Image: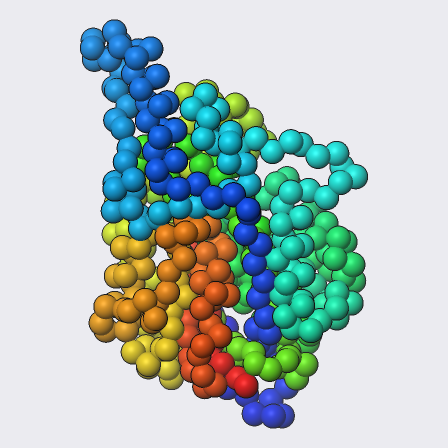
Length: 386
């Protein structure tokens, strides 16, 4: 566990981190539940037909059909954005197909992150030369090295340093605390935290229980010293990070086991989870973390104006918000982007913040929170200024 917090600073309090701006890159193509179900059911029908005798003999199980109603009830998701739509919907392929680029071209993840970063910089009135560091905080890096962050730094023309960090769905909040710590320590005045997520690449689109979960996106968060931040901005009142080992969400792919994902025996090299166990264990862990940290900061949880929660599952968000606020949250108190973006891993809570913060008034407090595989969870308490 790692905890970092400072009281609301006075004018002479020294370096104090704030969120100056955010940016968002959304792929142009979206897949609706109806489109996804048509593809999955075509695959299921073909599989069941080709294995009719084995299914009748009880040697293998038939693949049950999916439905848009099942997906929405299970997750709250209605559609998701993706980088490679046609191959995902092809019942023969059912996976993204993104051409490998030569080393002298910008990589896919870097290109997405740069687009989100440029929006954040523009919204803050910043030039790349104003930024001291880049943290690429995401679930699935395109490669082990060179670091994605360093490529993004180079593409933007930023001096200083950059590095990658992966804490699955909590990567962005872990990145925000890391950036805030650099500002507090005086090691940087302006840090970009980028989270490019091509979640479609690690999803098993042939698994009825999870084929609908993920989408692709990239976000950027600019964390700066309050003394140079534009107004309005968001004071980072405190942060808290928690990790607890669990195998209930796992992906075993790596350079030691590069088996092709279409091989039936490599299903665990893609996203796998025991959803009911995750729900049962993560909800109380996250709610307790939020309430405990709010108490330490002297913040009344029921007084939080808005919760920007990780967009994983509508039921989980509803229950966490209820435990924090003391009542079932309204869409205004806990907005969702899950219905149109799907689960975008570490980017989800940042998307919710990016799209749903402008209407808050000066002095309003809110919570940016993520949770996921690890288990990992991160909370960032914010207050609007200006």
